[in-house]
Amino acid sequence: MDRRKLIGVGLAAVPVWWGLRQLATGAPSGRHTDAGPLEQAFPLLGPLTDATWVSSRDNDDRGTPSPELAVSGFARLSSGKLDRLTESHGFVPADSPDEFSSWFEKPLKGRGPKNPQWIRSDELDSEADGRSLRLWFDRRTDTVRFRAVNPYG
Image (cartoon, rainbow, N blue to C red; front, side, top):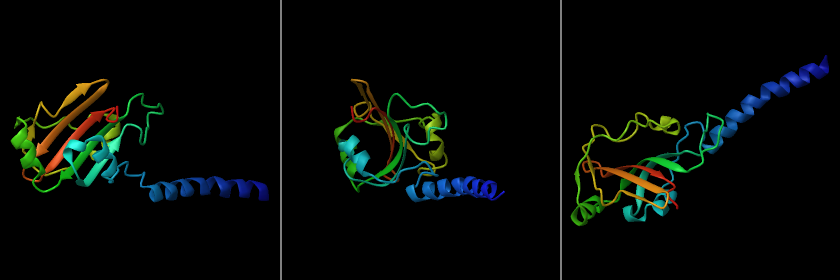
């Protein structure tokens, strides 16, 4: 009987341990807040703050690994950066980006600027060598909404 109790206590402790581990690593939300990887992937955007992003390699509840790395999220540009970008690239008003349709983007729903007025630049979007980048900018909040596949090449 003591052996069964010990096994029961051990099995009960596993979910608690797992939950605490997830909290410690920040995994429950499925979101990242570090801007460093984004600045490395998108150097043209310069220093970024207030980053919230997800990766196709995070929280794969489908049980299968993603063959490609996709990142999606929001970040705030440094003061004046969007003005400099609009001076040197052609921008047009844009429809709202897709509403986070990929499975890994679920943690982003409800995030981002309220009532954004998105603009885009075909010059800044790119597709080459298996890489894809889509950017939407909100001038009122200096926010960039991004979605990239294989951003590091």
